[in-house]
Image (cartoon, rainbow, N blue to C red; front, side):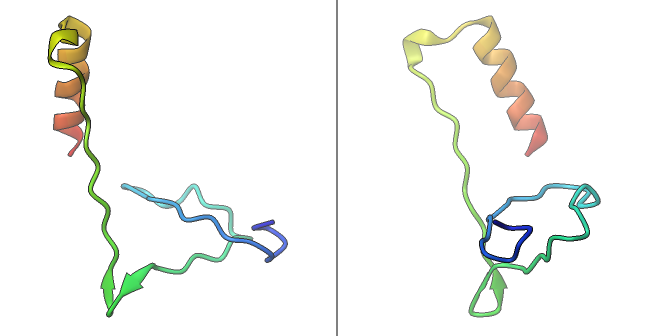
Length: 64
């Protein structure tokens, strides 16, 4: 529906935006002239921690 101009798809973009198809129009989402920002959080149960969870948390921390 996006390609035919009958729909929309909100997309968060980090880094290079060159992967978008040129047939898709993009518009920035703003509120009172300022870009809309989202807060992302990662949670897990305290008793479910382990090597892989800790490594994943470190990867996320380094990305943001």
